[in-house]
Amino acid sequence: MGRVGAVILAAGGSSRLGQPKQLLSFRGETLVARVVRVAMKSGCDPVVVVVGENGNQIRTVLEGPGPTIVENAEWPRGIGTSIHCGLLACADRIDAVVLLTCDQPFVDAAHISKLIATQATTGKAVVASAYAQTLGVPALFDRTCFDALLALPPDAGAKSLISARSKDAAAVAFEEAAIDIDTPADFERLIAERE
Image (cartoon, rainbow, N blue to C red; front, side, top):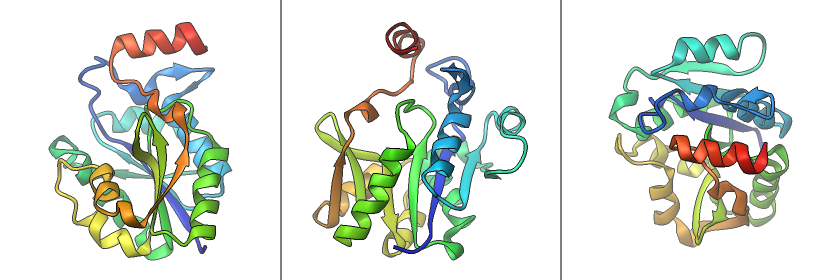
């Protein structure tokens, strides 16, 4: 396996939550800073953070050396625009990309490293996280998938490509990826049970 980058999708407006989920604090750090930290710790380089609605606030949180921050002016059109924007920022320098979101607080460097190691041993074009009877992100896509990722419709996420390439996908079990933050109740439950 050559160079693996990470694209962190942090452009959304968090409409169901009512506040920027990227900036929620969990175990002493914001969710966006947490996912940047674990991506860097796993050896992903470069780490690209795609911002939109709350870009200025996220930039402030991520000040200093570390990730490349890319603005997606098209973010209201859908997550596919953020995947496109983030991958364009690094595709010429990497052999594979790990797609990550901010709202899965239990994703850690060990899991990202496992995705990378699984790709190296299986040679599969896609290595996805297995949870809740599905395959999803975090997921690794090798260079052969880049054109398909860049061509995703604006409202389509990586899951559609994982499904389309399921015969050429490896799965890495990670049930805690099913825990994500979309509503105030989700966050309250997280704090009550896991803080």
